[in-house]
Length: 460
Image (cartoon, rainbow, N blue to C red; front, top):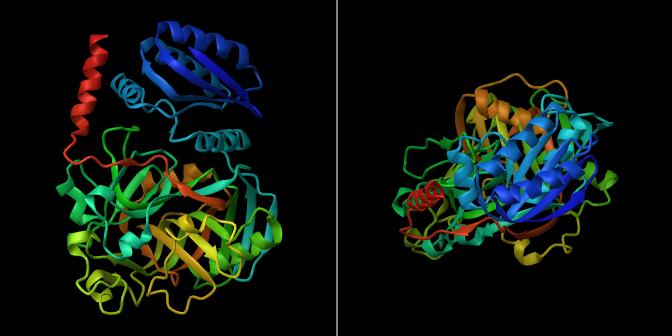
């Protein structure tokens, strides 16, 4: 067992390579005994290069997690390979550890855990600002550079040229915040011609099937199950951890529009953040005065493409392809929002233009929008009480997901208005391909593969 150790501020990262069997577990325990000092609150195990784990390894993980939990810290796992994931699930410990897609997500989780002193504590606000359309109470977040990770291309959606060959599969992750086009199902016929607007937030995936029923569907996995995958033809995920948290309150009783919120945050960033490059990634827990949305009504796959060769947003096609609100669909509700916005008044030349152009487009229902390009999706719930202070962000998102009554899910129009919101802000530093997407293999039974892995484990 090869183990590389990185010592951070009050947490450590162990990068493991080889088998976490009885022999490897002894080596891991020795490394933990050496580096898990009293000052360490969190530990991350990067298991990307670990292909095998047994109960001996799981025993070390459980003991370490218990020790750190007593300090209000945590043991987190990164990069679980399919066999190791299956073993942890089979032994009943999949919900014993936070599991992340990559190291930046795990490090952001640890930094927040250390800063807040545990998941139930609040954030520590350091600034109060009066903005053009409301007030902001600001708490610091992760210092790591944020990114937008992209699968597919928005142009393939707009021209309805998503094909079987361009599909991706993504696993569920606890802290994934993403938007796009997608669906759920094991077989191609379960989702391909039904794919619609989608969002992942708070460990859940919500999507609006294009089956004519206009009824969102959702899945909240109890564990980080590796067999149930999100299918997507286009997806944008926020990566790197939230750099700041903002408790925002509108200056008007009728609320601040989504456009105005972004403008307030753009202005705040220009004055305070030298790392602001013109693009923000946001996750929002909001009290909505009004919700106006749109939903694609047909899956934008090649065989359903408009006969005129134009985009699905073209004036000749939009009525057939979109259901767009002109009046509020919902009033006085709670929403979870994920999105990304570009300040068109700034210089965006520092980004990879090819990747940047895969993300943004001008929605025809957002008329007159000349100062910013926004792309937001929202899950709507019956109203829940709003936090009166900057509480733990991920914990509050999960509380809404767990306790809330799902009402709707839509592409959120910029004219929607909120009265107050808890906002996680990422100052996007780059657009890059998402390494977590796997090409969808037509005809492959994922459950059969999992069964084969478990049989192999039993033989061991």
